[in-house]
Image (cartoon, rainbow, N blue to C red; front, side, top):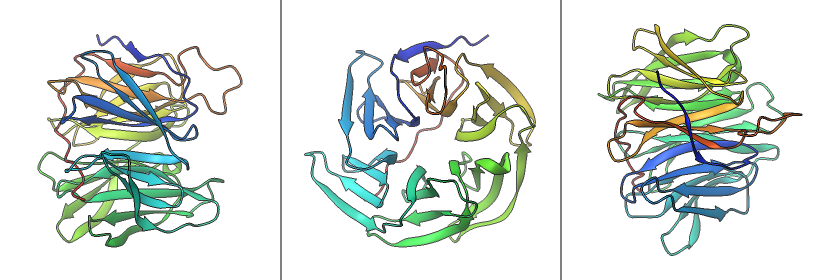
Length: 281
């Protein structure tokens, strides 16, 4: 039985985007609405908190150091010395970044959504280090978890209101042949962020479901881990052996949030994750 622990006791409005940075041995995670980028070193317990000038939907390590950030008005590069520049600046009124992932080839697959969650108001785009942008999926509503199989031939993706985790065939030309991997039943919450483990299984956090689920590559429900706060948002493996599953949570919109709503939780020894590539830019 996997038991959760509190890694960071916080009150993030919308905790999201956990990412293990192997180069620094730290977990990066966000408070989207609080405009904060957090880091946590499980070896020392050291934490840092940086602020952004806009709502921040994603923060991923860059190969040369620093971070690539998904922000309200586009995607920017934060250098190790704190310098910032836009990689792709595309302000759209009423729209923000929500989630992103780095593909096996080092490109960033970045999502957007409307603040009012209007159907089809967001996109999923692929960005490379030279600033080239290609829209992969138009007409996204609340684009969330994105991840790849261990061999890189499959991509998993969540548009939360569909209640599905979808799977695509993936190669250097892009993605095709979209089909459902699984559908979350009514009353169990909505699929949010996801990660793929070394066995090729998909772990998905359930918004308003208070749980993380593991699905096999065939789409069979394999494990359910119940957590104390209902708005679980995303998950990622971290730690020296990539065996600990970190889970972000949110308190936004809750009239009586659980004391741990907004905290960073960890499930020690939950499985075995995949090393995550850094953004090549």
